Image (cartoon, rainbow, N blue to C red; front, side, top):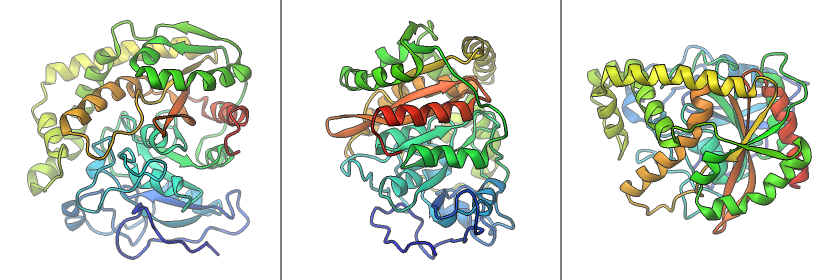
Length: 398
C-alpha cells in the first residue's frame, strides 16, 4: 500500500487526492509518484494551474499514456501537483492555489512551471514526479530544489493527454530524489535504444560565463567529478552570437506557438491571470510574424550546429541555472532579469532538441544549484547512466 503523508509544502492541488495503485510486480513497484496538473487522469479535472481553465473544461476521459505507463510499471500515483498557470513561467508562483514551498530553501521560489512536482520530490513526499519542460520547467525547479531532473530528447516521451504550450519544444520530464530512480523511470518511459558510451566532455564557455561568479565557483568541484567519469573537459563556444540571442529567438518561437495553442481559449474566455502570465500572453498575441519566422530560421541553424557537435557522443556540461532560486520577495523586474539570463542557457537544449539531465551539485548562499549534462537526441538512456555514475562520484543519493 502507498505510504500516508501530509502535504506540508503545498505541492499538491487542493481537494481530494487523485490516486491510482500501481500494477503489482512491475519495474517501479514500491515507488510513489505525482504528476503535474497538465497531464490527464481519467475521471479527474486537469486544471492547468488556472481556475478558469478548470471551469471551462470537462474531466478527463482517459489517462495520459505516459502516466498510465508508470502505473502499469508498478508505481503508485499519489496525486496531481501545482503548476504555474498554463505552464507559462519559471518561478513557480501560483496566486490561485498557492506557491509550493521550496523544501531546500523555504525563503526562495521553487521554480516553475513544474513547481509542485519538484517540491513534492524535494520534500520526500514521493520518490519521483512527472513534469513538463518547454523552456526549462523541469531543469530549473530541479536546480532550485536540489534534486535530479531530466528534460528528455524532444519527442522521446508521448505527450498525448497533456496540455500544450509550445508543441515543438514541449517535453515530458521528471524529477527524482535519487539518480537510480531517475534512470529507472527512464527505463519505462523512454524508447528502446540510446545506450552506449559517451564522450568527450565539452565545457560550454558561454554558459559558465553567464553564471554569476558564486555559482560558477561552487560548481568547479562537481565539474572535476564529471571529468573523472568522462575525461578532461574541452572548452568550446557553442553560441558565439551570445546567449541573449538564443533567448530572444527562443522567446519569439515559443510565443508564436503558445498563442497558436492557447490563444483561442484566452480570447474566448478572457481568464484572470496572476502577475506576469497575462503580460506574456499579451506579448504572444502581439508578436511579429516576421520575428517569429526569423526565430524559426535561426533555430534550424543552431540545431544543426549543436547536433553536429554532439552527434559522436559528446556531452555538454554547464550550470543549469546562472543563479540559485530567487528570494520570494524579489521584484517582478528582477524576476524578469533572472528569467532572461536563465532561459539563454535552457534554450540550448530547447532549440536543439537535446536531452539534458541536471544534478544537485552544489550550494550558493545556502541554496542549491544544479550542474547540467546534455547529449544528442536519442542518447537519453546513456546520459542517465552517466548521470548515475557522476552522482556516485559526488556522493549524492544513488
